[in-house]
Length: 112
Length: 117
Image (tube, rainbow over all chains, first blue to last red):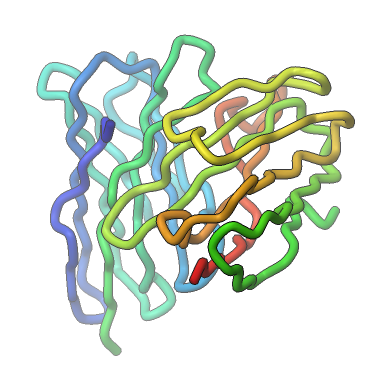
């Protein structure tokens, strides 16, 4: 069963623009993570936000969490061609914090 | 550190054949897991282990076996390959101890692309 669902499925923007991806989930969570996957590679952890947090920043990344709406957003500011990748949200599937459910991802293309 | 390594990178099997996908990590992580990734879908958890000698099933365990005899290694065995097992397989590990990195952070290997004919 899929807990997280990213939106949009695909996004194409110009270099320098901001990219926003959304994630919706169904049940209560302890934390939500965002991962990036470059074509043909493994996933790389970007940022984690806990259920008692509303916003976190890491470099050009900004993540928000709205537990009342069961949704999160990932904002990448001043995008670069190197940001071209698929982005996944992952929500914890149990209370031990070690099993996660990944959404189908958003494919981001940043055009030069 | 090499991080999480997986072998082979690519494998072609015939239906009914068996094989073992290897996964190793050199970060002394207690927790390791196997996921499969299919087109248009997120990663789905196959099996996981919270430490040497302890394994458990994830969301899609049928057709796969695992064992964890050491902290470093977590092989995934396909008992009798089926075309439905054509997928990309990722191994991941995480550390439950304290530190700057959240314990929930998963480190992924580069993946094994499996084609079952």
